[in-house]
Length: 96
Image (cartoon, rainbow, N blue to C red; front, top):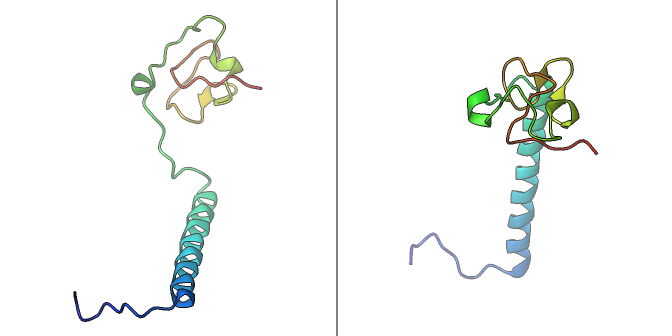
């Protein structure tokens, strides 16, 4: 066993170290979220139409016009490029 490992930690010391790690992780997450918001969300890359299986026609009653990801008039939060309101991709998520 390495010399720098102590086996005499009390329960309180271990709990304090875990809380410290938790708070440090939370600070990193909050900072990352703030950076994304400051960048206007442009830091998130969109997927190519081909990778999403995008087509410019609907799949039955599923179309971009009634998908939560569609942003009128012709864009999507997930798929790159011009998106037809009557299009469809495999990431379709019906608006509620």
